[in-house]
View 1 (cartoon, rainbow, N blue to C red):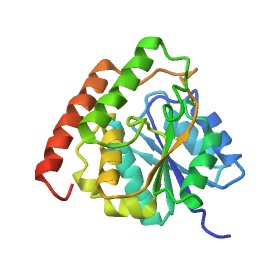
View 2: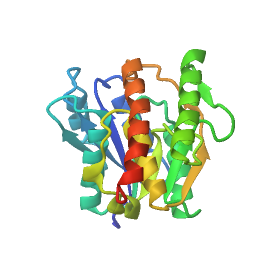
View 3: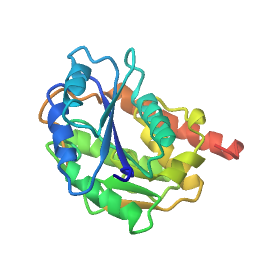
Length: 243
């Protein structure tokens, strides 16, 4: 059998209520996707559930880390793992079904057929497509994207999106060891680096649905950290040629 070109990276912390269903849903798609779980020592036994699922799902891989080290470092660990294994398309998504697994097919098409180097599952490219968020959070997210576009100059509507597909060459050429952001600012920084390198970024419209099970990891502190990080990132880009 030919090697599967797709790997979906899913960071987890206390996702026992969602992890089995998300693995089964991705594995049932009409295109094959391998799945890499990066678990930060979830106290609810998420990693143990993944290990049990590996007996039945041979497309499922697990990296266990000793504790919470931040969303950005989880994805960076996943990127390096995926590049070492030679995957052509590397995806990010959440474990909680806020991203519909069926939309992975849209991201795959955007990169494999339509010429995108980075495909973003965008909540804002065709209006505001968010379900079950309070209005205050929708406004906070939407205004944050306006702020990021203004500061950076990126022509991306959903700058904080965490549902994405990278072509391998993009990750090969980003200096992953120089990525500064640890929390949610990581999503912005990676888009900014991709944009600065001149790669083609395409936004694919999706509907984002807030989680039904488990607890959200987003806090005001994380959000503020991301916004201040954008300003520092932009200033650094003025003085440092090779980000």
